[in-house]
Length: 192
Image (tube, rainbow, N blue to C red; front, side):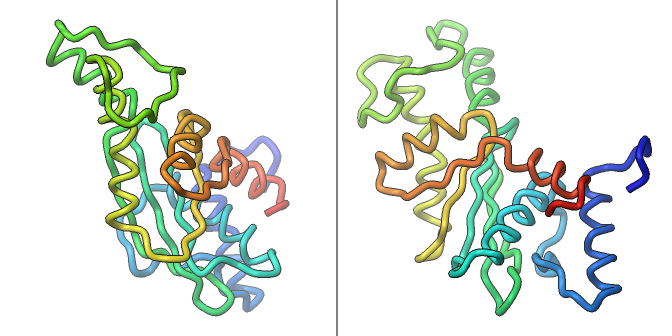
């Protein structure tokens, strides 16, 4: 990359793929079986795939839950020495859900965020019941979509809170709060 040039993160990833191709190296993640996957999801899968491929025992499946404007789930399967993107799910983000409920039901007393124990089973008041619905939705998606033997990662603004929730629900979760930005930085400095 030329210092001072303006280049998007996905262009960095594409350049990395092109350079690898020129050297006869297969890309770490094959995205050919999915279409329309956003750059943030691609970058997250690439960052984790790089980490897993370099480990002594890469996971058969990787899944990344990104808690941003939208809550996204991205899944890839190990295929010899690289991963193949399988797809995932996109759900409304936690803040988006809160804003929509406040807008549609202004009489509800909904706090902006919650640092309480957000997975406590059944909500015992309106606010806790709403948060149970919002925070348990990704868990239900996981139960429905994830393959067995998946290595799960969380990233994004609510990743730390959701790691706690998902751990309480029995998942082993790896926390990478700034995964996408770390991947971009690694690509930009040729360290990934």
